[in-house]
Image (cartoon, rainbow, N blue to C red; front, top):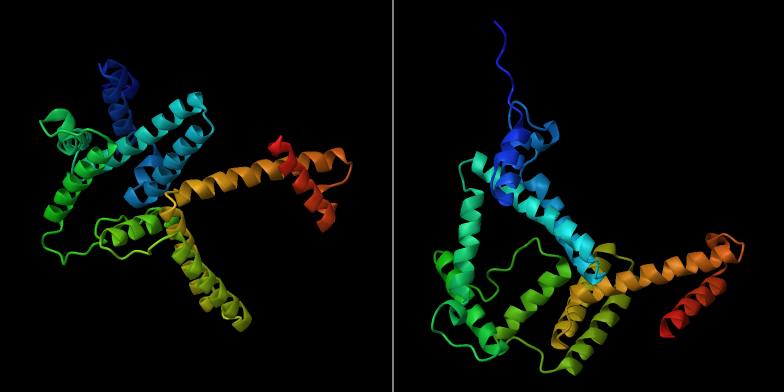
Length: 279
């Protein structure tokens, strides 16, 4: 007696009427215990989380570059991450992709009463206040059994500069705030002095601690100026990368390996790149 013909998961995917249903079926096929992908079957929430973070950054990178074709691709990759986590949760009987979609839909309706109810919002500031009030109400319900703190609700896995600014913003709402940017600059100078002392003492732990304090104050300074510190550093990274690659091109045209240039020559190559961007 011949064995029954193995069903092709691609046929099931193509039968799905909605694109999101196709993606969900694809993910289920990848995680199928008998016929799925060996790599995908080994994954769990913790092993996939770094890929989720990476995809979010790649979305931001495509936006920074105004690369809409790449943005379309990266948004797909990020969507796939949500489907991936939902599938693993479904296998454990925790929640499903439908639950995730329903939850975010209900949350957005709740946080936009000025759109879906009768609460008015005349400007962007009114919208911000409504959003913060509704969000705070959600958090207070979720954290009712815990000792409340003004710093509650800040995810631990955020990029460090972003999390620093969120901590500082919440502290400021509790009236723990510098009076103005000049006071923060005074604190910045104090932290620089303490870092110099740590460097002189040659204690790596002390240097690490003081450097962390310095970066934290810089993030606070950026927040005081209404500047996104994370975005500012991303921009600085892109600028350095752009200029450095320009230096490499100019060095190659000179007929000498980049690494063989003297410090003064490299400094001139850098200045040349700055002048190019200034034109």
